[in-house]
Length: 149
Image 1 (cartoon, helix red, strand yellow):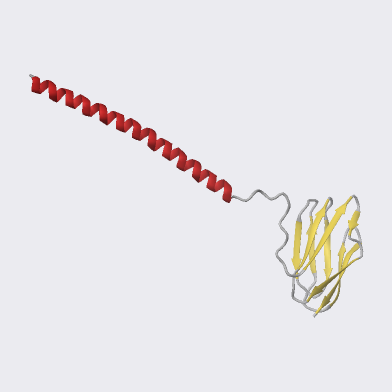
Image 2 (cartoon, helix red, strand yellow):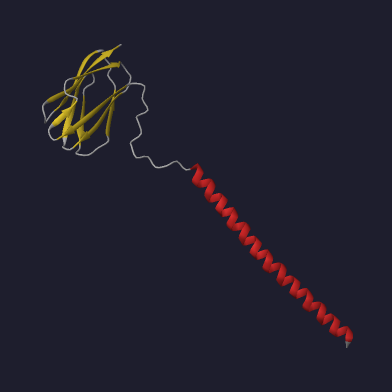
């Protein structure tokens, strides 16, 4: 009977130890898991760039002309710019009205402007000379670009 009671006590002690280890292990695992998740989240937060509030500048080694159309006023009007044959020319347009930009070059280009900000139109010119860019509906010359070889 004493041997049976000793075995019963040993089983109870082993079960209590097992529950204590599992309980501690579970808590430790959860803590480690939470810490691992927090570290992972922190690493993700650190590596994430903040959202841009402005449009990214165009990646071009050419000419960029910014055009603003607001309340019937066009900026620039009769502007001047320089460009190189075969290099990109980018027109960045913000407008409150719909219109068309005509590019008088070889080859010719036409771009439809919508009444919204941050529109970008890119083209190249194949022949050196003077290139006029005009608004069709507002009947204005925005810019004249001198294109060199």
